[in-house]
Length: 40
Image (cartoon, rainbow, N blue to C red):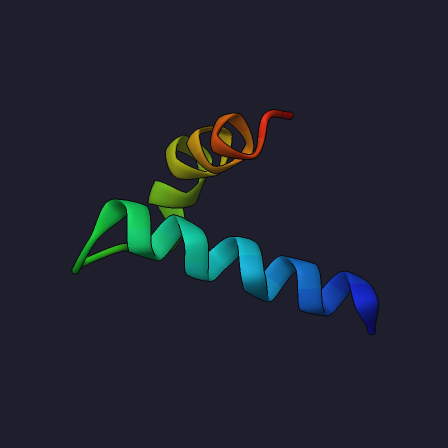
């Protein structure tokens, strides 16, 4: 359950970073940006 919560949170952060029109294929480019913002 916790993993699903983290995945949902990461998806939302990627969508906020990308903006309108995010599709599944865009996640591979956006998730590294989200991780960088987190300092990972």
